[in-house]
Amino acid sequence: MVSNGKSNLVEEYRLYLERFDSKIGPCEFGAYAKHEGKLIKKLRYDEFEPKWTEFQDVDRVFSEIMQRGDTINDALVRILRDGCAEFLLERKL
Image (tube, rainbow, N blue to C red; front, side, top):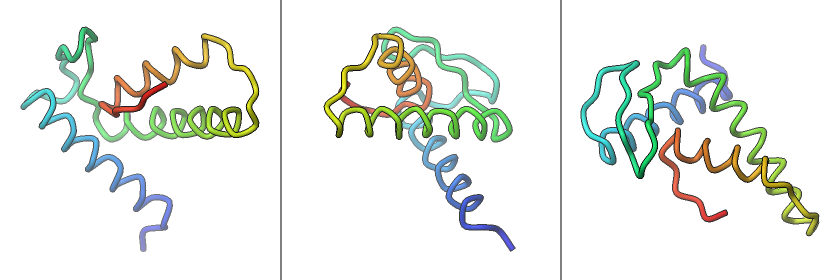
C-alpha cells in the first residue's frame, strides 16, 4: 500500500512531467532544455523527490514569513525563483 505522502509525491511528479512537456516539449530524462532564459534539467523521479521536498519546505517558510509580515533576504527569494524555474511553476514573488 502506498502512503498518502508518497502518493502525493507521485502525483506532483506526474504534474511536473506534464508541465515540462507542455512548456518545453519532449526531452530525454537528464537532458537540459532552455526555458525563459534558464537551463532546466528534466528530472528523473529519484532526482525530483529530494529537490521537490526541499522546495516545498522553503516555500512553506516563505509563506509563513509573508503571513507574519517579516522581511526576507534576497537569498530566499532567489532560492524560490530558481525552484519555480526548475519545476516550471508560475509564482509571483
